[in-house]
Image 1 (tube, one colour):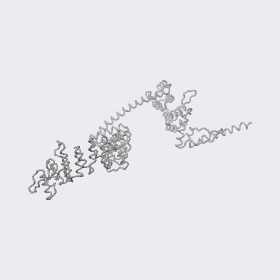
Image 2: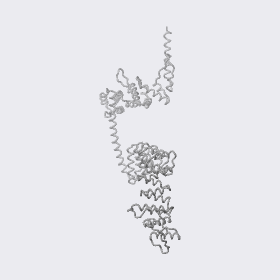
Image 3: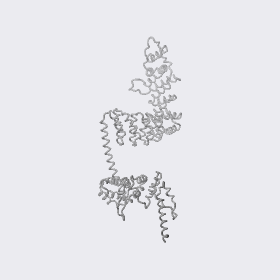
Image 4: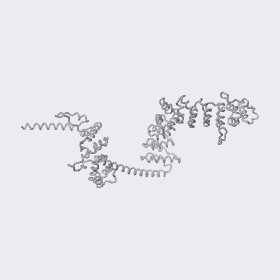
Length: 583
C-alpha cells in the first residue's frame, strides 16, 4: 500500500520539476518556446508572451515578443502587468512597451494591465499598491494613464493623488491635466474627487467627449499664453537689438538668426532687412547664419532668408542655395529661391529647375528665368533635359508664352524654335515682341526680320540698329535705320537729332557713313545724324583721308579748309534705296 500511494507522488514531483525547468530556462526567441515538447495529454503547452518578453535577449527578439505582449493585452481577458515591470529600476520593460504601442487601443490595453496590477483589494474594494512602484515605473505609469481615455484610468490617478504626500502630487496632477485638460483644478485632491464624482458615470462616448472638450479648451489657453509670451519676447528682442550701435549688431544678428524660437529668427530677418535699407551691412558671422536659414523648418523663414540672400549675395551662398532649392517643397518659397539663384546659377540644380518649371504657377516663370541665367553661363543641357524644357514651352501661343521662354526657345529650339521666335515679332504682346527681338540679335540672318518688325513697332528700332552694328555695318542698313527713325515722332527730350542713327553711325567705317550720307544728301537731318561734326583726325591720314574729310564737310554744307581740295557731292547720281549690296 505504501508503494501504491508513494509512487504517484514521486512521479508528480518529477513532472513538476521538469515543467518548472522548461518554463524558467532562458530562451533567446519566441520560436524556441513555441517548439516545446508536448505534454502527457498530447497537446503543446501555451506560450507565455510575458515570459518570452522578459527572457528575450536581442533587440529583434525583444520587439517580436513585445508585439506579442501588446496583442495579448488587447484580448478579451487580458492578464495584469507583471510586478517585475513595476519594480524594475529603471522600468526598462514598461518603457519599451510604451514606445512600441502603435494605436490608442494598445495604449488602453497597457493602461488596463497596469490598473489591474495596481489593484489589491478584493470584492470590488479599490485599494491600490502605489507604494510598490519604483520611481521610474511611477513616472512611466503616469505617462501611460495620462494617455488613456477611460474613466478607470482617471479614477486611479485621482486615488493616487489622494494617497500621495503633498510634495509628490504635482506629477500626478500633471497627468490628470494632460488627460482631461482641467488644469484649473491644480493638484487639489478634493477638487478632483468632486469633479470625478460628477462625471465618472457618464457613458463612454460622453466621457470621451468631455475629455476632448477639456483638452480643446486647454489647448486654446496654452496657445493664447504662448502667443502672448512670444509677442513679449519679440518686442523685447527688437528693443535690445535697435539699441545696439551698428558696429555691435553683426554678432547679435548672428545670434538672433540662430535662435531656437522661430519668431525670433523671423524677427531677425526683418531687422536685417531694415539694416540693409539704412546701409548697414551684416558681418560674416551673420551672413553664415542667414545662409543656414535656407534649411529652416518653417517655410516663412526659408523664404525670408532667400529674399535677403538675393539682396546681399553672401560668399558661399550659391552652393547653399542650390542645395536648398533641390530640397524645397513649397512653391512660394521656391519662387524666391529661384530669383536669388539667378545671381549665381549652379548646374547641380538643373533637375530642381526643371521640376519647378514643370510645376506651373507660381514657379514656372521664375524657373524659366533661372534656366535662362544658367544657359547664359554656357551650360549645355542633355538631350533629355532639352526635351523637358521644350515640352514646357511648346506648344504655346503668343498669349501665354513667357518672355524668358522666348530666349530659351531661341537657344534650345534649333531651326524650328528660331522660326517660332521670328513669328513672335508680330505678336500683339509688346514684351514678347521685345523678347523675340533680343533673342534674335545673335543671328546674322535675322537683321532683315528685325528691320521689318521695327517698321511696325518703333520700340524695336534700337534692337534692329544693334543687329546692324553687329552683323551688317553697311551703308544700306544705316540708311534704312535713318529712314525708320525719321518716320517716328521726334523726341522732345532728346538734344540730338535721330539719336539711334547717330549712335549706329559711330560703329560704321568712314566709307560706309559717307555712302549713306551721300544717298540721303537731300535730307540734311539724316546727313547731320550720320556725319555729326567731323574732325580731321577722325579720318584716315593721307590724300584719301583728306578727300573723305572734304566730302563730309561738303555734304554738311560746311566750308572746307583752303588747303583741302573741294569735292562737290554728286547729288544727281546718288545711290537710291533700290541699290543692292552693302552700299
